[in-house]
Image 1 (cartoon, rainbow, N blue to C red):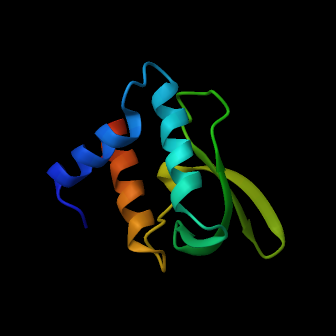
Image 2 (cartoon, rainbow, N blue to C red):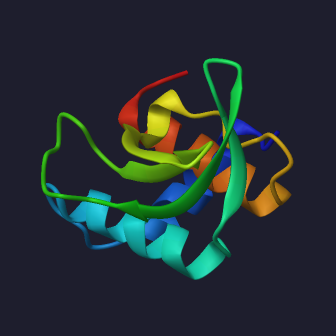
Image 3 (cartoon, one colour):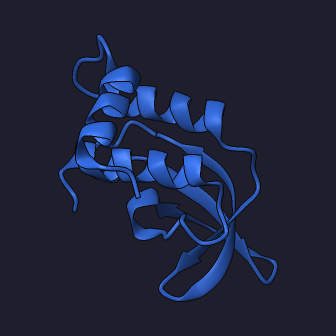
Length: 105
């Protein structure tokens, strides 16, 4: 797991010059640049596959992930997913930075 100062540097790189909800759009762009979908994730202990991440403009919901499991699909808030399961360390670092930016420990 990245140290707090490393996460702060990553956050600064991602949201540089972003104001208001632009930070969400900046994080969305970072996910699009860094993540090769589909990726494995865990949702309350169940293995799911994340096929995309999006932001619909709802700041209360934040970034959302399109997930699939057993032929069914759903849209879930990224913060409700454990994207560290079997994922590239860069993805885990990006998720940690996003959570820190939101103030979620």
